[in-house]
Image (cartoon, rainbow, N blue to C red; front, side, top):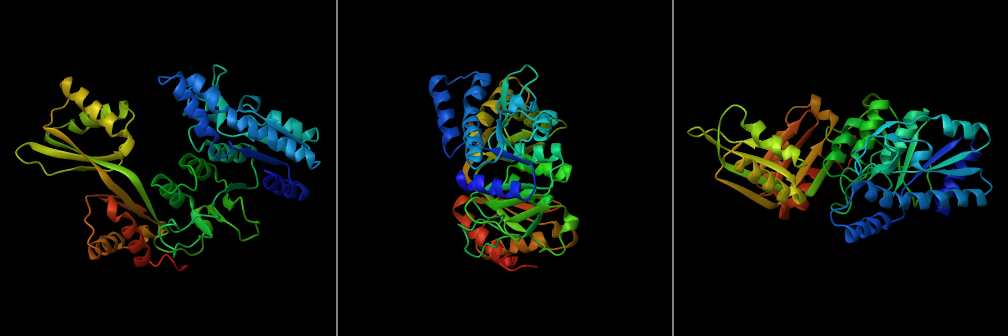
Length: 394
């Protein structure tokens, strides 16, 4: 905390008014969630937010005190004091507005640093809300947009965004710059450097993001800048390889092939809160088809119940729901894929040469994702990283 406070002090010495967004101390939110679940397995989400948001309040107060000890005029702010106005969706609220007047008034009175508790806000009913895990990143970008900040620095436990996870391949290279669209895809596909919603906000409001290490001294070339595509002079066709090992493949067999069948299947899944990703429908055979989709492995039970209930209501009929929970998703991402043909073919050939069978494929303009057996995940990441030359700059 003192190291972080010294960084803030340097920015103040450079003439800036600074807004610091803090998260809870390591492990604290998990501890608070555990207490809630132990006390009340079917908990009231409003009280859950009241408990789990307290970790950030402690950090904000301690950071403000640390700065004051360094003779930096600082004050802590909880979400409701700013106020960070959010929706009423407790545990997954979305920010609707951040009026800057209260904090700007204190800056005008001589405060140099506002230390704001991240991850939290206030609902229209006046209750504390939280933004979901990783919400402090989202808070930081939202404040940068609301106050027209010169930049938004995210200090984390890594020193930037890498071409893939350095724990899987030692050839992973830190990127100096990455486009918003690429970062958004990587974040949504499993890269845990930044929370997806924070990148969405940064892209929408053109907030320049820098990802830096909390443990290294920053310099002008430190970290990775997440910026607009036009701010990147030269880049590789593929920017990075992402993976997610917490995936499951579910197949509904012998489904009637008729108009509206997809809605009958995926409507109940959406209502049950199942986050469906890849979808493949087999060729119809005698009016019957199989429908395959992927979802996070911890949502399989929810998906099975939603489909069983839909079948019981007569909304959809199928022979069986087959779940494969031993799969992983591996993806390549890059804005250069828009203007280069053959990227997907190269990916598939690379996996074939390694003897890796592809179960499901999805593509978008700047990404290709495949579902494979989980035991081949690290091999696939390493092979693709080598095949696309990601250890070398463009």
